[in-house]
Image (cartoon, one colour):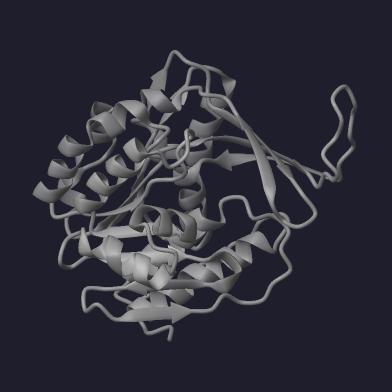
Amino acid sequence: MRPLAVVGNVNVDLILGPAAPWPKAGTEVIVDHDELRVGGAAGNAALAWIGIGVDFSIAANVGSDRFGGWLREEFGARADRWQVCPEGTTLSVGITHPDGERTFFTTRGHLARLGLADVLSALDGPSLAGGYLLLCGSFLTDDLSADYPEFFDWADRHGIAVALDTGWPLAGWTEANCTAARGWLSRSRIALLNEVETTTLAGITDPAAAAATVRASMREDAIVVVKRGPEGAIAIGADGVLVLRAAPAVTVIDTIGAGDVFNAGFLAALAGGETLSSCLRAGTHLASKAISTLPRSYGGPVHFGESMA
């Protein structure tokens, strides 16, 4: 199996709910469920890899408060070289709704201070050679995204294929944010986007056509994946062939981090030498398992290397 790594936003999630309708100002609502857990796109993917027994490296940072110490404890030795910032740790409060959707309230916190030096001190380039690196939280990790050109140069020198999931920009998909994302995608080997992100970046409403347009601006061997929630996922690989996978029908409990969990399943299968179709299946099945269980479960260890088609 090829090496795996993730770089980006790890923060604390406090999940409460379900709540409906949205409460009036000055009132109090009692909900049935609460959970304090590791969050952020990088954190969610890392938890999924741990849940299915896949080895990986992770580069992140934390704040200098108790939440920061808790995050480091959750990742054990993997967090030994994480930078501790003077800022407070980023906290997201997620309010879930009966239909499985959610609303987030997030503090700015420590994420913006993750820098290139922090990442390179936490990762060993030679040991990741030939592997896949999930890069996420681009619009939250300000210091690092400013140094993306140098980061991609480092990955190229070590033969590391970058899989990019930008996340949703806080200011929305302005022209400046679209331009930045297209530039990052041009240096990436894999694009892991949701349907709205893909169609917005391509300026085309059809997801398949939008995926082809995004791929045309990337490397010749690029893979573009479009995550479509309950409709599954599609992908276009180096051969230009469109691959589709439906998602299993499940009872949705908590969709938080579903796309991040998909990323983990997809990349683990890819690192294990699976076909593109099997990688889509791995991603959709892992995400479906996660969003339909409470407490969240990933189904236990998975062994890649034999076709899952």
